[in-house]
Length: 312
Length: 252
Image 1: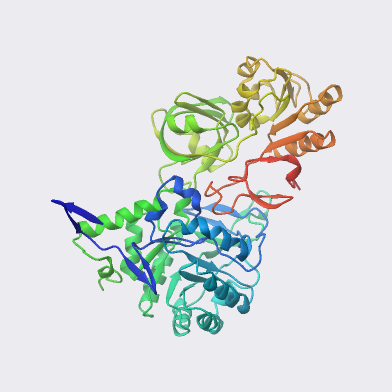
Image 2: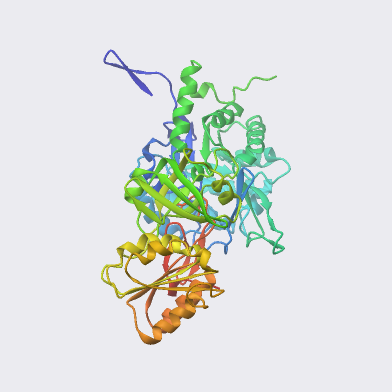
């Protein structure tokens, strides 16, 4: 932010952060699968730190049959199943995103390790994205996704292979559906991941007692929203204490206060997902709110705040 | 499309479990088209969490009206909101109905499916058009007097015969089509009803538009949660719809 004092521009605070090679003017990013360009009707999307569009797979995917979503206490379940138009169409659609002039991070999903590598290669060659978020944590697909991200050895193998095929920033998206997320985090770091993003959704379900059926057609789905924030925050903090690479923290962030909690716990950036549904302006409000917090607390640079939680 | 802080002007029960909400919302009132909906934040806290999508049944000047049935947590909460309170809404969303222009149209409404169709009725120019409105009984015929004043042929049907014919709306449609034809059929109501109407229209080779509803999260086509199966794959009810060609929709 810059303030004009007697005609001279003066920077009050620095909000810019780096995730690997990706420079962001602020730490606020949109989470994969929760955002599209329609939101430009609610705020200027060029304000965002970065954008992570819906996960892309090599071939088009139909996704899961409905019902795909269900509201829960302070949250929701989703079992979308990675519906998307495939890589070819994704590359075409990127031109609209490129007009925003902000970093674009492609979230990639595959059923096999080779698919992840192929996606990484072709996205790198396209020169249309600034980073890759590796989705080895989707709980709503039969092959790939969660299966890979719950195993440190498989995680190491995938990330190593992707590392060899790209010089783009690699961000590994971690699942919370594990006993010890730091094991997966360490494996990704060792394999060459530039950063980590966590958490993906928590595996959950819901039941219709009137018809005695599962509510979601997929039976299980991923839980997101404010309900999961305490888990996400704890995992960010644990991971921050384990690895040296930067973290994009996410999970139930509703406002700037929540975002600051994640930054204090060790996140360099934050991703906002489900909250966009409840308040389409939330990303803009969080950027403004973080800035306000820094000014009120006389903190000149957001980087000083990262992981600065005081030990009790 | 925008976020608007609106004020509740009225929120009254029109018959058992059914309410009419009047909001002062100048911007959305100007923008909204027939068949579109708005996303309403029904409570100030986290419960319920998501906004609720509801079609607009009336819009004039700075006011819009929403006709809704209490069927779950969100609508129950909404029914308790009082005059003078603020309600945050987003919208208008969705594609809306095709403009009737000079077409001879047949509107088929079932129960509270009359809601989005009400905004369309004043746009019907061809007076040989027809409105078929089916409901459980005569007390559930919302806006009957208002519809009669539009000046288009109006047939009522009730399940118990307490008003109009003791038939279902699709049955009335089938009979009407034996005597005459229409350029298009536009319908909204229970899914089973719309499926029947769509089938009848298809058999007579008449274009049919249906207005669907689904549980929603984002309302703007981002989350892909509210999809319906169509002949061209899964489509979002919030952005690709809520209005679809009947033939496109795979109802089963």
